[in-house]
Amino acid sequence: MSKKTVLFVCIHNSARSQMAEELLRKQAGDRFAVESAGIEPGELNPIVVEALREDGIDITGKKTQAVADLLRAKKVYDYVITVCDEASAQRCPVFPGGIKLHWGFTDPSKFTGTAEEKLQKVRAVKLEIKNKVFSWLASLA
Image 1 (cartoon, helix red, strand yellow):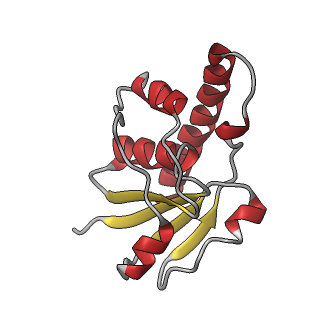
Image 2 (cartoon, one colour):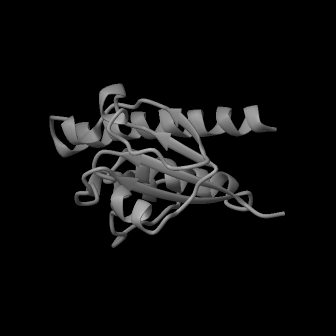
Image 3 (cartoon, rainbow, N blue to C red):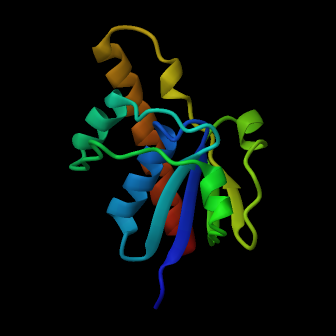
């Protein structure tokens, strides 16, 4: 049985899409080939790296990637899931053939406060994403 392909998209591919990619991979990597990309790729958020490490996931040194590069490569996905706000999700290009879903989550790049306060907020978003991944997987069963 071939794996279903999933692409998670957000603005910078620095936080939400990275967390969604890695959490789905950890939970169901045997069933899904997962990638993530950004509309305007930026730098990986170090607080996200730390939050994922708490789940046994190490993305230290991972690079962000651009949605445009995946389109140029003519990549096709079974599911394209936007994880940014609704307005930004509208900017996501259409990939042929896949089911498009939108799961909106708060942008960690907007968090303010001390490093510990930001980490707590990222943990909350990570938990929201993890719960959404679990419920989506259950809906497919």
